[in-house]
Length: 285
Image (cartoon, rainbow, N blue to C red; front, side):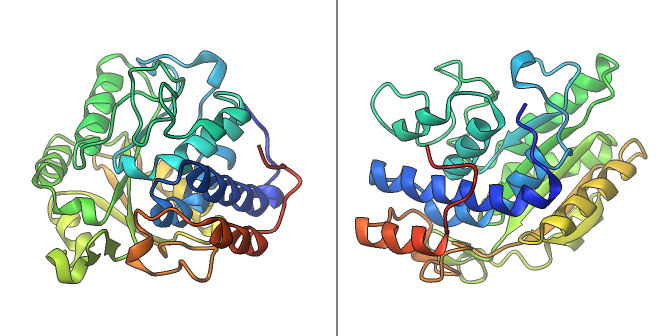
């Protein structure tokens, strides 16, 4: 597992953003906005001593380690960049995003036996259910580790999410820490316009969840909220982190614009983005 000093975490987040922009530009296809928007979350989770994992000991069962599930699988570029930087596979492989026969498909896939991937998450709305199943499995196997899952706010329009949320609260799945990437945008525009979610926190709270909030671009705040969530585990309630982010964060011409949900940057846009996301000591792939 790659070790990153706390003061280096913002640099790692910036490097992951550089990776994302370069990967999607090379593939000329992919989901840029949400990937950039969650780079700080992934950095804190994987490199901030939050997720307890070891790439060399990865198993599909996840016994003896924390588990992470990406439900909104279209932001696979940020997951792949993080996993490569964490040591799951060679960093150079990031250049194969979306190529024929690549292990790095447009949405995470289990078909290629890629270390770190336990579910195929191309279809939205299923990750929370998968995470609950894993959390139940840990309880049955007397494994004290935790299960983390990330969902998108637009994804909350899927009915399966709410069945899962109701189940987790009713069955006291208290080894589960779920996060909603709350950027207010989806492929067709504002979530308020497409399908108003109203108060996400009140909805989950009514199903028996503990609720926490965080600025998704403040790494110290993210580390703090993860620590708080961990202290709440084992107390009879699942935990939801309502994480406020900006789509396209880090690149000014992409920030808070729904058109960047699934748009690949041109060569000129990539050059400008990389100028804003200056080089880091971690180096490009």
